[in-house]
Image (cartoon, rainbow, N blue to C red; front, side):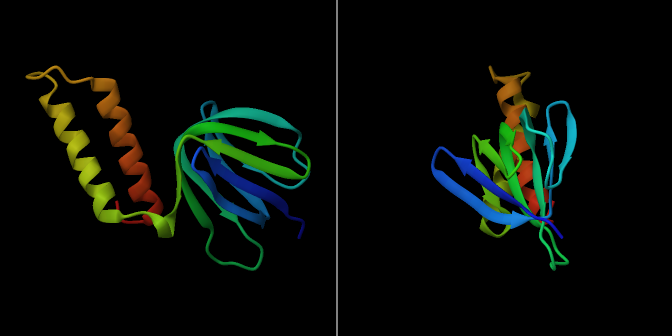
Length: 136
């Protein structure tokens, strides 16, 4: 089966690079599936999982991204993410603590001057990281 080169890059450097059969990700406008030969496009990404289907592998590679830009060219998909982590690189305990902190901040917002949107985004990022590891 045909493949397409995929690169996931953050300001700190590359996170993932491989040839895959399909890329599935969540853009701000909805879920996208990209196969080799896809038309060129650029789309803003939402906080979510990038699912990378490799040939001959029963399990997809998963990368948690916290927004960014997806660029599709005929021979390559590039994801420029604000932050990204492969499933095996995620510290589950740290993600769980971040989730608990964000939930607590959202509960405390009535009694303290908490930036609710910031706490909500922190919660979404933590939940996304946990979902990628399968330990939500």
